[in-house]
Length: 508
Image (tube, rainbow, N blue to C red; front, side, top):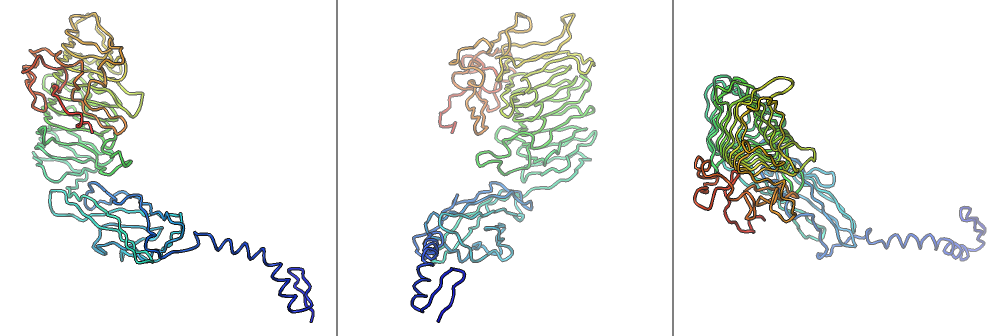
């Protein structure tokens, strides 16, 4: 019997020879196939010691406003073993009661909150994406909401990852206009969409502990009057509504321009901010031009920090600012164009970390766009005015007759030394402190963590601002915002905070 294996080009005359020649020819091919079959990633094990590893054992969402979907968090599931692992089942421990929405390797667990049959080859991984939509809790206080993502392997081993979020109920206001005198009290935060407007001749009172969360670009627009009544342990907070994180180490709340800002229109007078915490805005407080016959703004015991424009801008207004910190702004910390202003025991610190082309700590002028705004008075008493550059004070003052009333009295200034002894009295100049070991500029302050964007502008022990204030000004404000006495030691410190010894562990 004679036949031809044309594909292999072999002529075989006997059955035994046929088998022999086929084996010889196919051996290299079969050998290659055998090698492929021996690849560990193609083998799957049911050894109970072979388990998965996770990029984190807990997925945290911090505070999540109820009824608003959270951002998405990612979990990586690793198979560090040589052999593959089969996942028989993935489910949420609370099943259909779970508020968490999970996607495993492109497969959503919803609506049954479970899925089956996944493979993770040896040395490979798969991705899990998690977000949460929390229902209202019916209470003012935050409430922790936990669940677990359960994973069962073919071996029967069950592994889990904790999912946790803090639920916070809130009042949702969209395009809200305050038409009658209104008082807001502490409790759940107010989330502002499309801005909050205070109508003319109307007073909005914010009691201690009130929190206003502004959505992207939303503003507080005041035609009437604001009365803010915060205290150090329960400040009134103005912030953005992003409660999640840009990076694991960086909350959105620590980044600028998360919302708009507070604008006091021309007809708005008699505003009082006490114990206000205004941060992460696009601008802080903007005061439209108005007469100096009435006080536009009294700002006390407050903080304006991490702002993407000017912190406080004054245009021909009468204002008084005491015991207040204005820091880290892309624009000027304080911009004064005309008006009648007094700053007593304030800290203006220009250390904006996000861009090098930042504004000054203080800008003084009496004209803008070729329009004159008389600067009747600009007094800075027992203040700190500092920042990264060698000169953080800028002026554009037309003063041919030398009669503009501006004064720096017993301040720490980071500017060029002035020979004007009438307007610069008892000044310590940081620009003279060239020694790298000198405690000046950012070294004045207790905590200056530019990696995590954490700051504490209370004084460090070596600060050159200690004991340089004038007692006559300190007697007007005998206590700092923390209630620390200024008048019971060697002398009052410049700035809004009086030095107290603190443990180094507090910086952690």
